[in-house]
Image (cartoon, rainbow, N blue to C red):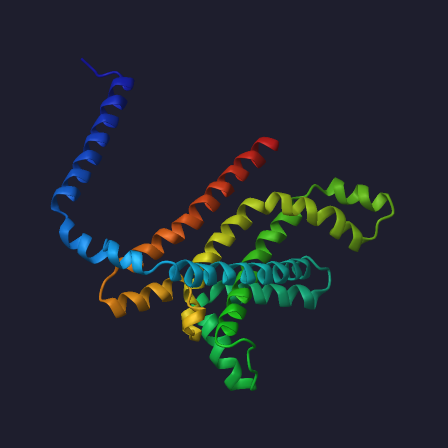
Amino acid sequence: MAIRRTTRRRLVRMALYALFAVLVAVAALTADWESLANNFLRLDIARDQFPQIITIALRNTLLFTVIAFAGGLLLGILLALMKLSSIGPYRWFATAYIELFRGLPALLTIFAISFMLPIAFGVRVPFAPAGGALVGLIAVAGAYMAEVIRAGIQAVPKGQTEASRSLGMSPGKTMVFVTLPQGFRIIIPPMTNEFVLLLKDTSLVFIAGTTPLLKELTTYARDQSSALGNSTVLLMAALLYLVVTVPLTRVAAYLERRLARSR
């Protein structure tokens, strides 16, 4: 007797659940929990890291993220407008810039701005050593944000622009007061994701060099773990990243659902 399709689906689901339970059980039984606790869960080490890991490492991570995001947002708006411009050289420059900095790893960009530019042109990046890393993050973030902003601008219905122009508004005023506000409403979810990605990219600031008071989470945890010979601080840094990023990703998902319903 042939098994009905619904019964077959139920059996497959039960088998997948059973496989998952078996894998979890095998991992739990074979893991060396004592070694894990000694290397990653030393409560005495975790207690000694407060409040420095919050007041220095997490604070610097959030500060670098906000500065790089704000700079990248301004640069992204400029590049998006240039790419949509009817003037060829502006459009070509924006396209070349976006393709270049989206194609290069952020680590190489930070290294180039921090070390290659001063050597090649004798330019001293302000607020070194963190200044060069922040400029590199802004350069990369601006390239990615430019494409998101351009997509948001082009998603605004043409009727909105035509209506504002029929009311006598200039192209510049139409872009500033009509198109950009509506475009930013559309791109809030992807821009939230860009913020989360930028938060994690601050771990690359170390390539430019840091001082004890400018260490972000990853560098602080790495240095402390090396000094103590224990990885508990790395686990603490990972948890702090999650404390910040998980709520942000949930907010982005909520905004995407709300925007989909409004459409």
